Image (cartoon, rainbow, N blue to C red; front, side, top):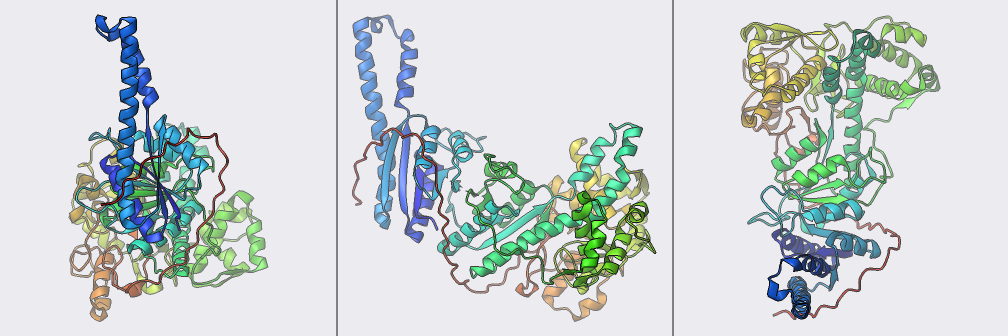
Length: 638
């Protein structure tokens, strides 16, 4: 793992917490600690010269002024040296007590510049810094020195936050996985740290199916009628609903499955969680919910250029996370990309059909056909299967353009089945396997649209509205009243767009309180009373009965499955506790763990076997030499 840990110090609360974390890591991994402090004697000298004209007249005599300059230089140099010594001697004393090799360094110069140069010139494996310095005030999110160092020093950096009365590393380690080599390297580092520090590790991934819908709502009002026809909002939204949204879920689900396989190879059964929404926001909520002590993210994301200093989501999490953050700069590419339990084979004739499609759309079409085939349980995709799938998915004119005759397609009133684990919706067929989470057909339940319509009538007058692509969606009086509790403006428009998106995905003609409340309540600060985001299922209207639509299954289910059914039906009670994060959450955990999706109910499986250590060497370019480090006198431990 880490063999040489670099520890900048300044005696702030966060720096002292970083010192304890570095010592704990070094003790567990037999690493060496290099402590440093940078002081600014030259800056003080420059400032004193600037203020000389403000001195009283008796001090402005040339002889007296020269004497004052010598006194000031002596006091500043000696004082700063003593301060630096005291900072490093305290850390050295702690390392000696733990039997850890400690090397002290002090420099004169600009703090972040000198630290970056020292990091670039030396083979440090890990940089451990406090999140804020001595200049911290109430509104400070992160210190300027830390901010500049993490942007320039592309080395694994652990930014430690002081937690009053608590150990900085005393809770779960959460790894944010987005498929980038940096995030997978961070996962391996987290697994090793979890083993050494005896902390649980879990992985989370986030995809955003709402962004395009919000954007379309924002631009529809500014486009001319002619431009709107060219943009073709209806076809664009259909493309996202039928292909892109599910494709995104499948992509990020596969990232989590790869992460689980990486952990399994190192002897660890990794819990994985798939969330939907804005990436940094959902990760932040999840970290707070889990009371994590460490968040591990890649320095840059899967869509970033290699030359970027830090990714946008990583920067937001670094500033806003209530725990310590490890920015992973190392890279790791897993040897096997796990796609799912079943291996799907394409025949040459099936590939020939796809080749008729324009190159720019072949990737999306292949994903859509794969999803269609997995829904129906196919492991071999033939020509006839591709023709049937594209006939269902593509508009008639597009199907005709590539020579596919459309015999039938699902009607608008076709049955819609919802996966109780991840919320994936299938229209016109009961899937054999969920293409997102891999769940079997018994995890799907039919949406009772008649029950929703009855509930809407019971909630008052239903008002129909036109969406940006001229589709009608009704809103019950109670749902609309709750929506208008949101502040007017962007936030209300964004939540309204998300609710409409969910209703359209489930082919609902009307939005009821049962549909809208789980998305609105967290934004209003009422997350404790929010129900999980699931539409009412066949068998009863919303709110009637203990497990509407699941009476037969409930009679044969045990306590855990009872809780699962309550979660799927959106009913209260059981072991499920609604969380503050997005209600549309998919947790991809093995069912044998005995947990209810969306609920924290871990089962103790005993300690996991120790994973193998796989350090990754890094070659670094030579930089300009630093100012010579002044030796610090060691103070023996008491």
